[in-house]
Amino acid sequence: MPEPKAASFPAIRGALKFYQIASVITGVMLLLLVTEMVLKYTPIHLELFAGGSGGFLWFAPVVEGLHGGLESTGNGLNLSMGILVAHGWFYVVYLFACFRVWSLMRWPFLRFIMLALGGVVPFLSFIMETRVAREVKAYLAAREASSDQTSSTTPATEGAR
Image 1 (cartoon, helix red, strand yellow):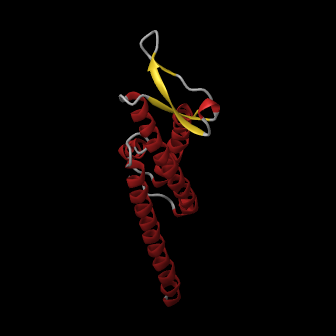
Image 2: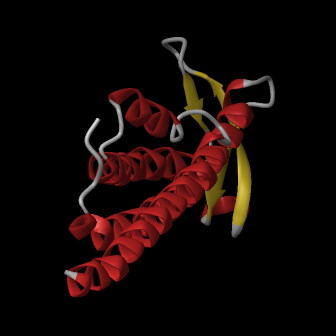
Image 3: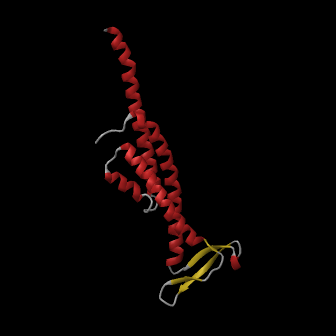
C-alpha cells in the first residue's frame, strides 16, 4: 500500500482535526438519538418537545395511530424529530471527514468501513477518534523525524565528497 506523500502532511493534519470534531459531534448526536429511540419505542412512549402547551421542555406521550404506527400527541417544536434529522445530516458530514482522512492516509478500504461505523454504533466514534488521532499523529511524527534525519545527514555526506 502506498504511503502518504510528505507534501500532504498539512492536509492530513487539517483533515484529522475536522475528523476529530466530527467524531465527537456525531457520537454525542448518536447517543441522543439512542436515548430518543428508547424513550419513544419502549413502553415509555415519550417524545421531547420545546415550547407549546407543556412549557419550555417537556415530554409528550406517543400513542398508537389508526394505521398501527406511533403518533405524537405533543405540540411545539418536536426535539425528538430534530435530533433524528440532525444526526442524519451530520452523519453525512462525518462520512466526508472519514473519507478525507482515509484517502489522505491511503488506508485499506476496510479501515474506511470501520471509521464509517463510528457514526452508527454507539460509543464507537469516541473509540475510533482516539485511536485514529493517536495513530495519525504518531505516523506523521515518525515520518517527519526520519525525513529530518535524512535531510540533516545529506549535506554532510555531500560535503565529504
